[in-house]
Image (cartoon, rainbow, N blue to C red; front, side, top):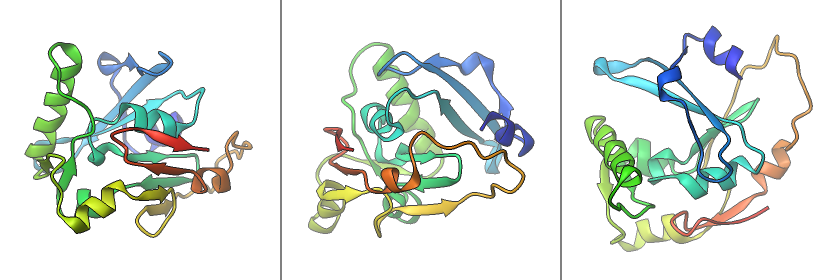
Length: 177
């Protein structure tokens, strides 16, 4: 994955490296210039557990509920994030470093025109956010990635297992695998 990102113009940003909160595994951050002097950013997590579990556990908002496997990219809430330019807060904003990180995340979203909404949704949106979902369902954007020329190594989690994973209300981060 690192080779693929670097060959596509993404630069490793060692100053932004950290660990994730679930198992303290390393997180490598890659950036490249985007529109309007903003930077695009990808966080590459080494996951000893399901990437979906890690994502749901740590996501500060629905805008960050997207992930990449070796051959596909998934966005779990594309309609709210990319079409309506909205997201929903999934973590409490507390004092200290964790709260500062969430505030910085929300500031970046705002700079990119994405409004953060509280948990007061209208009926249509509430159903979209709170219903039981499956990765790869009609509400998920799935993009097949170009894998020509890549050495194919058997993925420890096949596509079918990822796309059969269900979840409900990311704010609670419940998952069934």
